[in-house]
Image (cartoon, rainbow, N blue to C red):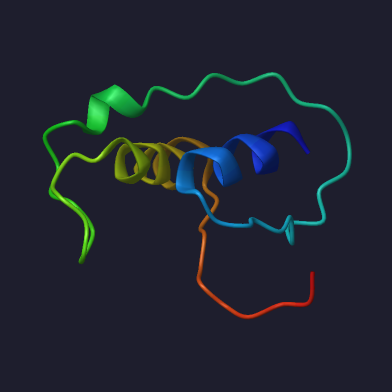
Length: 71
């Protein structure tokens, strides 16, 4: 749940955990290793949120997708 809350704060959007993976995990994300990549459409290149999304995708193997969901 801490990852979901952190991502929500960084992205300024609600994030819902749909992974269904129970338990507590210890991991480290290094978003700065992606600092030379291009930005997502509608955001400036190397925006910190884009770096975090790249780290979550590449280092943890999770993807985030926009969709409507009940809150």
